[in-house]
Image: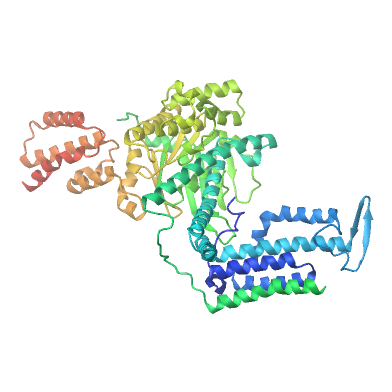
Length: 278
Length: 349
């Protein structure tokens, strides 16, 4: 399970992208997503792809690793592709039928496939893949704790008074910490049940449903137990929401962060302009 | 405390191997950036009907080793031969239920893997998966519960309402219920109190000696298993650095520290005495506290007798005092230390 789900884990290579402030990376990520949503044609997508390839290369993480991050979602991507094909052009968000000249079209039984539909389906999948890869880049280059610190830093101006940002960041940090812990626990339990003769990979569908129960009950019990232990241990060490607190690693905004953010700020602006002029 | 008679060594070496590992490697997440080698070049042979202790520091590969034997993990190099199955790297994942019925594995904190609403259902889970009928599974559940020394009244209870020690035993019983020939346990005594620990080990020893099952037990505390283990495997940084019986372990007790394993009380005590009384060094390591106390007693008295050259009353008094010591000795390992003064007085005189 863990070797398949590699998204969400930091891969240290010491690149310049790793050294960026998490706030700038999160902002860039948001801007990138906005640009992806706004983009409605191949030229924009090409620009976004080139930029992401540049950033991905700068992380010094092999391209193979990014492809692995895509793997768990390949079926969803296939589904999106087929859905776009069948739903056809004209009723999707990406309406290329008008913009693209009709290169060819073919009819098989009830299905009519046109170049425009194919192009829009490919576009939808590419956008999805780009989004996943970019998110993977963020988590590969930023530790979960830095991520949540970044979110906290970005939320602070929104909640001058009160402890909203801190609560949210603590919640996020604990949730992130729980993901690998629970996955590991689930994996151990799966193995323990396999040792008692219930191997997931050797079962029929009906038995699998039953196995799910043998997995869900211990994992849920375990999650509650962990959560309770964690809160007790936090309180025992004097943790209090809203208490004045210093951080071991200060977030430092350097000029590189400003440039990085500005570069990405251009994307949605550009996409919007192109959209308006078309 | 536990009076099992040890089979003689010649007998054991002839009996068949139920587990044979040849040049086994295992790497977690091979080929990914998170690849971590857990086992290097493991060569192990385990004979049928033996009780094997597996010791090693944290992260030494003990748990990975057990999972390989059960086919939960396939080796990334070498060959794992268990009973009549051979597991090889990159093989098409075989259907392993036939193997798993015969080789039970209890993970660390197995009580966390109970999930049914009654103890009985949990105990029946294994046998039913391995193709027993409901009736058979029920009788196997009762049998397993009894073999762990638990009362049948527990059958209808919810697992989560039991005490920690009971839950642990029920969980181990749920592995035994399928009737495995080989039972592997990963630190079954962790977090149990000393009475429960001793009881559990006595039960495992009984499974081995009376029912002829092969037992592999991972432990952090060598001392708890010293009395009953036929053989020891010590893991260190993914390698099996030692395989042999307690005597051989005693010979290499200085290395244990380096391997990240606490030197058991018995070995420390024995080493201290053999240093003082060289004639003890020739003897095999006494497995029980009582036996060790008696050996030391004999040696100490022999030493005294030599010094005073009072040979006439030697026989009688030696036997008498050994008897007396035997009466005193309980399972605690400080028994031999009681005679420390006596010996130091003897040496100085």
